[in-house]
Image (cartoon, rainbow over all chains, first blue to last red; front, top):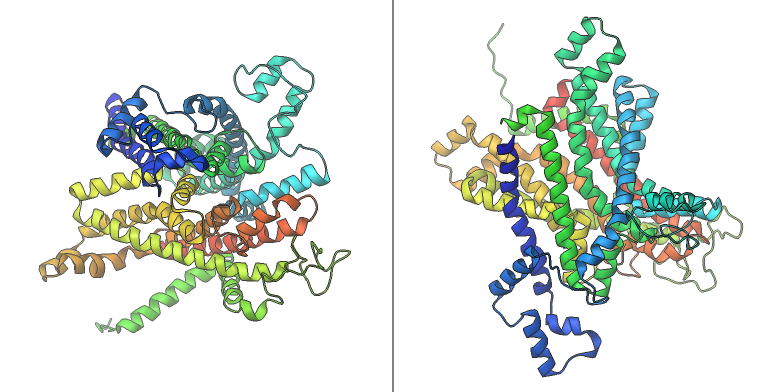
Length: 335
Length: 300
């Protein structure tokens, strides 16, 4: 097992270096002089230009710049935002819990609904439930989620007035951030109505973000179940006279879950892309909105480091999925 | 039993394969429905100039935010209403179909050609060529596709062309991986060895001998990428990084409509519906294609 983990880690090293090259190269391939870009509209004098270039190391050869960049990176220094002047890492860590909270709730919704729907659809193959849920899944899979979010806002915030339009919690409530998760923090604060407010802010964005993963998980579960139900060991279990619930629940489901877990893990990348759109629509103060804002504000250090952090994160999650896969299925490990 | 050998010409084999394919494809009602909608979409895009009642950029100053014809205050000349500057929604939606199909075709062509060449090289030559190419593909795949496309557009500058290039770059690794896997499966087969012994060069082996036998998964992936391209380009347009106003691209239309969502539901609803219907139709077709082209599923 340790060899398996080490092998996987070693395999990631070149990919990670590639990611750093892309993030590093990003600012350098931008058309125009990076110093002038950072200086913005005001422009700089020739001396100040040279000074800034020296400060950022732009006067050094490109490979030296890259090594410096990597050196700073390994020390945890990701540079400062041009707009707020704060370290990028600090900003990232402050906003990260909002995205994690949204993403976690979304993936929970998607799994809790998607897996049972897929299982039932597979057991009752060809029934109206199967046809209806798989049609719905295909619609969900094809959904432009930015539009879906707007529709939900029209219905629930506009016409029904049930949910707020944007943000994480009503401005009436103020309490210290302990965990960064609004749902938990609002409970800890003990303020009346705070939790309900946080929940009502979270519900629409998480439904929107859950839509595509839900569709994918339901479809994947159904096809994995169908495949497993045709296997010999399931027929044997049936022939032994085991009750159908045990055949499905224990023999079939456990084996069908292997590809499903992979699918759920791989949705993290999808979630990150979805978070960009969802957070923009609902003004959710998370990583996705931060990246979009930074791109439009031309805050390149943030974009550069944000890219790096997000890609690193997706890579880590994929690694964990890979390892879990090896844990559940020894055949993978020993290949 | 007679030992008669039936000889079929190439054209006849092709006709049989096509008939075979259509038999399996037409079994899937959803796929046929998707195909019909897609053909309609193509016709709408091609004959947009004939079908659209108005110029998609003409602004009728006396008709701002007119609701659809069936709602109170609607006008017969604007069947689906008008937007905030008095442009006819229906005409803009019709012209929008041109954008979506064009984007899909361009993105898939670039990604497909790039992916096939890169994947063929990796799968055919193996060794360090394979390692280097596949690591580069891994790096691209490590970024969430929309985020990477956004950053690429930020580098290249917002606009439709750059958005298409960015999306194509992001999709290309999927084709490369599929091609590579298929090529590695085919490379060891006898017919390839036979062709090599007969003196076929590397280029001929790669493109004439092996590639045609790897097409099935690529066709399916191309269909799925087509629908993703329509979605992602609309998302980029929605974020202000794709086609720029006054283009009647559906995502860009949605971006312009955002501030009116609580006042004029039609400016938000119709462009999104258009995106959903086209993407759904293409995905239905893709499902059908996969079932028809995948020999493993055929027998079950």
